Image (tube, rainbow, N blue to C red; front, side):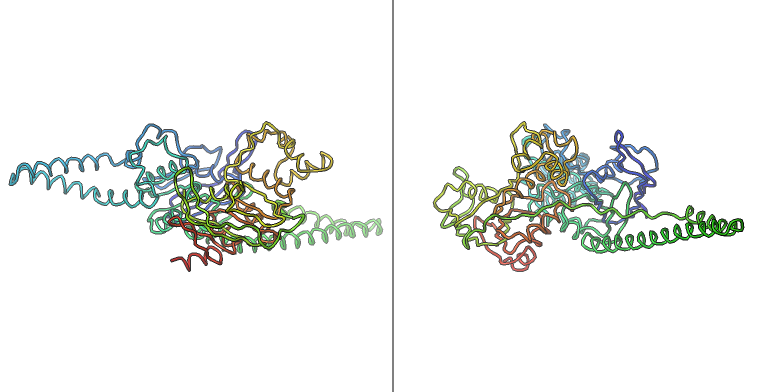
Length: 533
């Protein structure tokens, strides 16, 4: 059964065309990911399905009676001043009323033992409560709140929560209602790995239809069975998860290039033939009419030919982390160090040694001390933390704050020697084009801040790179470019990440923080999962 159908949908914002004849068909039970470059219209498609955005032309059809649950990237302000438990339980008012009635009659049965009227009333209410799925709802709410690690927040006010906590609360309020269609926009943002894995298991057992926009490739691999690529405002459908999509899409582009080249050869051959026949006609004057006629027939054939557009390959960011001078063998040593925030102990008795060319990832639940440990290393103010010889550090924090009114161009001048035209050319390779270079860096988006930090980091020529959630805010293609650059990097890398795909590609060792202890695993994320005790 078809749940959603978009036919020849067009949508523009101002003078910019976002969707240009988009076609999507989603069937009951599909697990769909929508991917594409930043700004291609992925979130717009979700907004159209949820009636947040209208379409300029084309048609949208949704199965009659289908209930939709939509998780936005940003939590909605409508929940401010509301208690978390009330937000999650929205939509179950009647069931909760019956639950309260049951509790009232349970008290009456204790106070009036043997009262048949009270007992019968209780049984009637209980039957209605059961038929409405009352006990199942409470079980589901308990399961979801524990799985998303928000059970301790039930009596908190929404506006008092962090951004990550707010998103988990909204997600819980959506999935407990069991909509027929789940629309999830970056659902794994702000979630730690344990919570992401719980969500994956939950969604894999979910009976409805799921549409996901996400940059989390590991998550897409585990949850989705259909990939929709938005490219130039149109869609290409692949009946597979993300990893298989990479192979199928590469094969598609290769085939399109071959078809394009073959057609170009044909066009050149036909044009050459036309020119040759016209030359024959000229030389055969006055008897050259047959040659001109044949040339005209070929020209008409050429005009009728449906031209194949040259496949567009996105230019990758020129990320190449060179170093001026390598470090010694011992890059960082931490000995008998206890990590605290004020009086709160986060990690006990840290003993850690990082060697030249190690690529080490730190993982653990939110709040376990990952980012704090990186900051203490950067501060280098403790005798228990010692760097080796010739260590030069480059650092990208999780929250990038430039704290400056400088423009992109002004900031970049500090890292670039040469004429402004060459600098602007270099910036354009990091997707800072034209008048954009005069944008204040304090006004940049999360993805723009990461790209500008990478621009600066590349030119610092550091031999020890420390990264805190480096894949946040950047699109998949940029992630993949960053992965390859770090894999070939001749220095040492220490990073915190919940991007399991990224960890698998890069990490040679995993440091797992649990119960205030650090455990070492000499492999990538899959190795860690296999050997985790």
